[in-house]
Amino acid sequence: MAFDKLELRDIEVWDGNFAAAQALRQCQIDVVAAYPITPSTPIVEGYAKFLADGYVEGEFVMVESEHAAMSGCIGASAAGGRVATATSSQGFALMVETLYQASGMRLPIILNVVNRALAAPLNVNGDHSDMYLGRDSGWIQFDAYSPQEAYDLNFIAFRVAEDHDVRLPAMVHQDGFMTSHTAQGVKTLDDDTAYGFVGDFKPMNDMLDLDHPVSHGVQTEEDWHFEHKARQHRDLMLNVAPKIQAAFDAFEKLSGRKYNMVEQYSMEDADVAVVCLGTSVETAREVALEMRKEGIKAGVVGIRVLRPFPFMKIAEVLKDVKAIAALDRSSPNGAPGMLFNEIAGALFNTDTKALLSGYVYGLGGRDLTKAHLRDLYKELQANVDAGKVTTQLQQFIGVRGPKLAFL
Amino acid sequence: MANKGWDEFEIGAMLRSFDGVVPNISTIHQEDRAYSLSNSFTASVADWRIEKPVFNKDYCIDCQFCWIFCPDISIISRDKKMIGVDMDHCKGCGICVEVCPTNPKSLLMFSEQTDEEEALGAWPAKDTSKPETKGDE
Image (cartoon, rainbow over all chains, first blue to last red; front, side, top):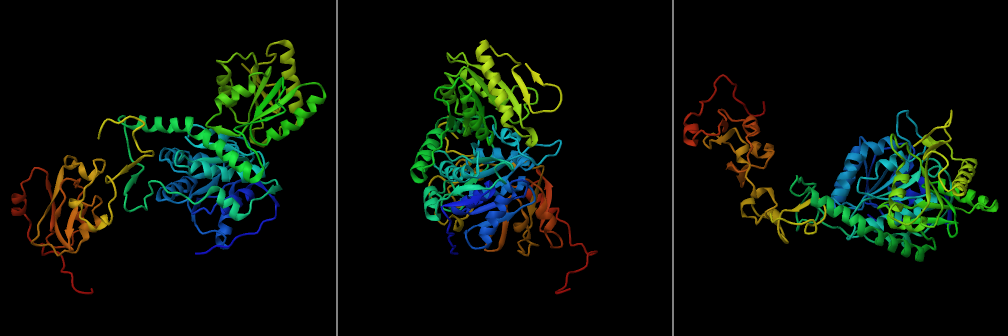
């Protein structure tokens, strides 16, 4: 079956969902098995429409749940297809059991996760609870801060995941509504250039290779399970980062858009730094520039690749900073935040004297305003001036009621 | 299988049924295939059984019901003629007996220890209380 190409303008006005759907079309996904959930539904709907209109040669499988969606993706990927889907929140949570299957089976599925809060109470808006839930699942996790990045990172994700030295599934995260439903100018790649960047799918151990029959999803017990998990972790620790860097470099050559494992903004001489994920990075960048006019040397660090966690790079980027705020948009529920812990771990054996404090913010789509960030930078500067963290180590930003802080 | 280290496996929770290329494997009968050690065909699960099916070819009409329904591919049939049961892989579930349409049945369950000759000798006679199946009725 032949398919038609779409002519795109150099810059299209797309929201994050449509940008991701366009990327799936341009990558010519063989199978999308999907179940709808707000706010990610338009991604798979978009793919389905492109398929129905003859712009993709593939198969859309409507299933009864997100667990079945990822299960369908696993089967199709093991059979030897290029496979992707999308989900959010409760759907992501229902998928979790199968996420570990996909990564353990080393199937390069791409999952677009439009980040949304986890119930209860039920909430359709954006926070990072689902993204954090996936962080031990053995997947690669890319984080987009805008529709442009949601588009670009899909191509990069396919190129990295399908590499035979990697063969691990990857998530491309974007913030629910803030990115997924906010239309912005997106610089496009033409269909041939986009497809050329990801290339033809190169199968590995596919079930449809009838000359080499394989059983996928086998059982191991205490005899071999540990060896398989060790190999997967080893490949995540050593193989993935160089391949991501190579893909970032190749993508920059192709498009002029540069990505880094750890993004740095105004960090060259920064005294105080905010480390965060998602759309908050863009807000913090703007505030950092304003703080500099007031004499506070403010910077921003954005995590572009959450897994494998850029441990060494984080330590290098933050080593000369005097005070750091780790912003977690997910309730740690009885612990310091994830970013606080990861950053503390990365810095602990270094010579840095940086003061680290953690902030929980934006749960269930609560805004992180510029005023919040101004106060935060001032607090960090106060810590620098005092030579110690002047507040408790964990504070809540933007929650109603009396000040909430711990540790 | 050898005592392999973490770096000696092919990646993925995946096992190969054969070592190397096997063109047209579907045209070769199971007993003639050079299965690898990681294929379950090389493992016997006979000791999972408490009861075993015994095949009595005197009554079999080669309808292939047992071959179709067996969940463990343990009915051996060649050229659509029922030959017997693969006793290394049969787990004694009894489905073949349940679906057998002949009167008396051509497959019956006996305790694992029962001698085959003894089982065939104890085969029940035709149950005349059951109606005959006729043509298109």
